[in-house]
Amino acid sequence: MYVALLRLPRRAIVLSALVLAAGAGLPALGLRAFPALAPQLSAVQPPVRRVERPERAVALSFEAVWVDTQCNRILELLERRKVRATFFISGYWAERYPELVRRIAARGHELGNYTFSHPHLTSLSAEAIRSELEENARLLRGLTDLTPRLFRPPFGEYNALVMAVAKELGYQVVWYDVEAP
View: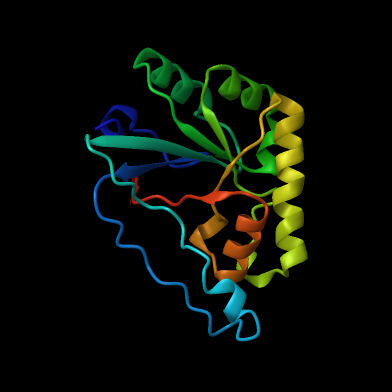
């Protein structure tokens, strides 16, 4: 419903909507790449894509990664419509646009962790994944006094190790169900 109101170029902040509706349809995690870790990782849940709700609802989320060309316009549209969203912010973007990060938080939007440098997490060690998440969380907390509790893996890439580290750090991993063109 709100996606049509926010038709924006895909350049800087990718608009994605997580449709909250009945039925999870979540993929199972493949643990073949981590046979030694399989016993402790088998209980790790895949990212949340949908949430069962009694009413129909849409949750909007934005990914702030490279350059800013639309953030102020997005914030104005959201405010005009009295809509709150989640902004998944990378550390690179937060360092480059600290005032926008503060503005997003001040307007009541949720901040999500999108890692510090936007790497391909599935090629990293547990320690490197942890470092990416912790460094970005420190930066966002320092700018806004808010601690992100949601995490979205860059490039849509995750595996059991990424999910286990995110869980260990207390994150709810959220993915989108519909991506804007």
